[in-house]
Picture 1 (cartoon, rainbow, N blue to C red):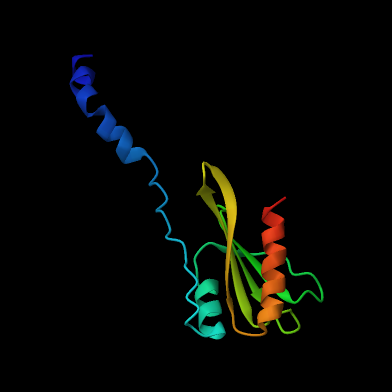
Picture 2 (cartoon, rainbow, N blue to C red):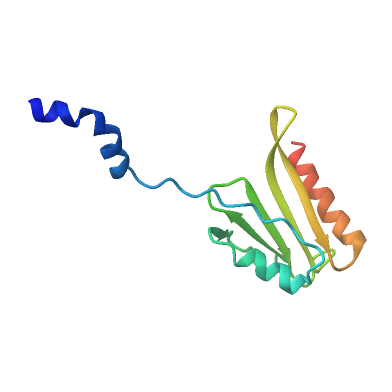
Length: 126
């Protein structure tokens, strides 16, 4: 019994050594619109933890969610309004509540880009 009592001060260190490593906090990707569509989409797709959503037949968008939530990306495909374009949706705290912040990079038709951005904004207003 006396031997176990001697280990008591070291118990937190022993338990910490057995605990799983906490997941590192992954920095969120900022959209750098000075990059080309190809370069930025490659950067988006190279992120660890990126999960592609199932693609609907004939849908000119590719949707990707980040593992753990809070961040999603939309890459336009040929035939989409504003193509080529990249959009990002991010859950952020604003005024004490969680809201969706939408950003994007327009490489094609600005009116088409604005149309898609307005649609994404309307999703967050619901």
